[in-house]
Length: 239
Image (cartoon, rainbow, N blue to C red; front, side):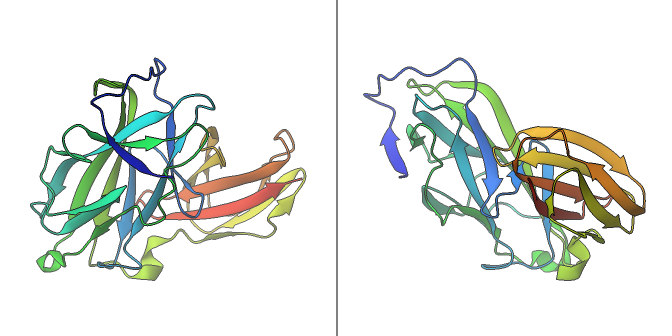
């Protein structure tokens, strides 16, 4: 369950290192420095829905998100929901504001399915970029550990079909090799469902047999990204 508390009166200790990961509702990990691009704006197809996961099995964590910067917008055209929803954002301000935090229980995500970032502006025909940063604080409100930044980009010159890499898997239930047909050069990154990066490989256009026999038996995500920032995610099961 999502809980918003004031930090005043919290006397719980936290670990020395950040204990969170970020993922989309689809299960695709969101990694530091990533850009998510949308060719539409408004609620629905332009929403970046996310979960923040507490990687600790013993401790609560206290989280905030900072609105770092904006290009071609002053913050009035973007909404972020993290526990509660906030609009008309202020650059440099963190949410929840003040001493409030989003508290996530051990081994859980924040549990609020409506948490998202969405651009509500057409930008006057110009692309818009927003940078957000998630970070962890201790019981005194002091930031610590590694943070994670994502760029949300709206490009009105892109259609929905222009946002994906031209690639697909011939099978997603595999034992030794993941067969992937790729029709352009991409960078392929493998993640487990906990958001841990397994490997990263550059692949040329063509048919590839990706070796996965050394992986444990579970579900994985292969994220393919080209030099334009277009991406496709392949979810597969290693038996």
